[in-house]
Length: 192
Image (cartoon, rainbow, N blue to C red; front, side, top):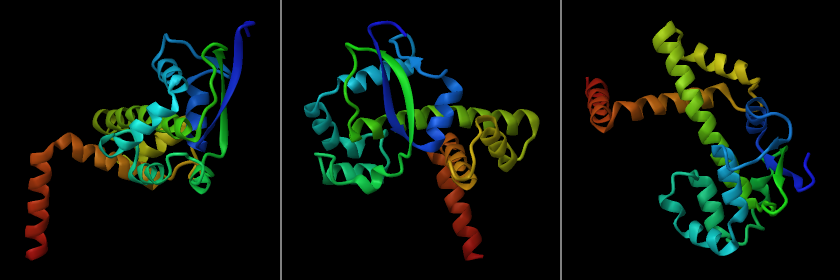
């Protein structure tokens, strides 16, 4: 470690920690040379006024799920949703230049976990699509393969949760028109 570097620790979800440990070596040096480094640096440089204006726009943001958005909108000071924050049970450490070092707030913790989750999901969708379309795997087996590849257990992230996420992804790939057709077909079957 260089003289001007510090080690920073951030609270993460269990599966996020396993994913990060596999993708980045222990105490990875954060720099502007990769996507994760740029995002972390940007988060650490965010001031509270930036956070406050972002929270107001949270309803249109795709970064947060509804539960997170509702909790953050209820309390902009981020001090009263500790029950929600209790699910971030693990810690991931990395190195960063001390000039960039700031304290991670609960808000940046949630944003960071959402960022890594979306990166992981993109890889997950690509992995399952490859295995199902190229190698003829069933979706369930392809999801288990991804979980095994990253060492995920059902305590980290549930197989059913990942399978449903992939099924939603597939529907999104079909496009709006195809979804409407599927709904019409479903209604016709129910009426028959």
